Image (cartoon, rainbow, N blue to C red):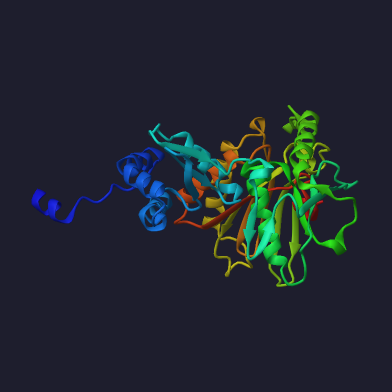
Length: 362
């Protein structure tokens, strides 16, 4: 048997944990180091080996690499703008061992404006051709709504300009600050300009000021659940199928909603073809168990408020308003894995400071 192993080689152990990944990485790091330092065929010699191992942990790990200095390779792991995956990037890097000649970075770091110059599709994105201004929204005063101006925007290159601006901001602000500090973003050309343009180099200072103001306003804010009142909403859809919603109407009238700016939606699909789009008894009971488990894991005292649920058209959505996105990302992912044989499960976590997601329930 050992003879056969010597002939065919020993397969890598499956990657089931952060520790497994870093154990595998350490076995190969010298080869990876030499590939990156030589700048020869990084795709084949490093990325094509790295990618499947990361995928064994979870979908959604992206990466960048290069020489940080003459003797240090930096590997940047990034969520590529997907909020759901940020916590997994952070945890993987936090678990990394110290390896001589390597630096591991979670998420794209913030760069000095003079170091950020992007060229894509023949277009340039830098401090010379990008400007911004803030839009004041009287009905939503805590929203950080930004318009970014690129002087070359026209009808033919709109998609390329939008993509380039997002890449620029990801690198200039840093991936985490981009996600946390801008609520709404519009890319505009000359015809859409409505206010004085500000150099993009001043955007960081503006966002730091707005974020500090926001934190001071809502720091320590906590919702009192003692007087919660849930209402059952029922409607008939155009198809003739039913829609049922159970909504915390007391919570929807709270005047401090922006203190919990992240909306987390957990979606389960079932077969309701024989029941007007509603679940059968066994699916109903199973989904209730899942919902109860989510509520036990995401507690109001920790900053996770259960808004309610909606059941219709072969789907159930469970809604939470959250102070942060990290724990819901982990809880939802683990629940998805645990029940993947029972339901088709998807989830999303996004910024919505004024809970406009729930306007239809009011």
